[in-house]
Image (tube, rainbow, N blue to C red; front, side, top):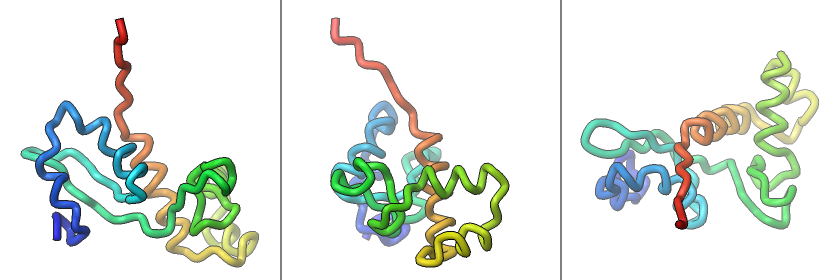
Length: 120
């Protein structure tokens, strides 16, 4: 098993200049895990088991457990001042952990580094 017990041993060998490519690589492999750079390598914080990406559901946007509720919807409701209890009342099929993982996923994506590739 890799760091954090997630079986992702290859992460410790990812060079710093390739770190920005890692989140998309994990997504393409069907693995969602929050990762962050630390001195000497990467740290896996948590595997995101409740966030799904499926082109057939909501146009491939990140969703909660394959349901037609996007991470953006949940984060938007929280940003608008709705409480977890209000969200769970409006979407009774969601669970508190779904909301926590939606926030973790959003935070991870915000921290992702995008780099432009010069094709000239």
